[in-house]
Image (cartoon, rainbow, N blue to C red; front, side, top):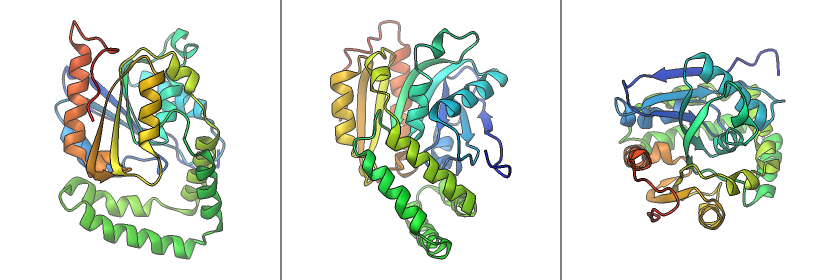
Length: 277
């Protein structure tokens, strides 16, 4: 790891005896864009959130190891994994059979994919994005960030918590941060957790935004329906995008909590529940 990369960060937002939801962020690697979703589940779920170190060397397994250790160190022994985009790969890594035989280990109760995947349907696209990022100087990159922030003020005008976090999101996009995101893109291109998904009987659900240029979610959901024994349900929000937890924060929270409640019911059957479109 680069010597000036910060350590893994964890925050816990308590909610009494409510279920635990562990948020694993996407390529950007922090909790800045999940603010409105966090507010939507406040008091209804114990929300555990992470910011990744700006590492250039970690594997997906290294991320999973660090998150598991940090969770156990904070007394978080079980819960639902919420894997956003790249974070879905870390979630699958935490479901591997060899990890679940360790003592101690974090015990996943289920998995929610938010714009996530098992193996990216277009791995060459991740490598192309990495090359484009390498070729883009910092000046134009900052101009793009300014444009994103300007659009974000319109896009998130009904999500005040996310709106308030935009400045922090932009400030975190340093040169080292860009390198870390490019390293994660290479992990996306290489990762393949299809064998893990085929063996997963825990409840698995999927959230997507209709406009998603980064992950072709119809292919992901098609594959999960046919290959993952635990796949239960999915929902696409027509006015949301790839960052569905930000652009459909409140309805996404409602769906997730309903899925968790249904899975916790005594007669729940994760393999037979109909899929929600």
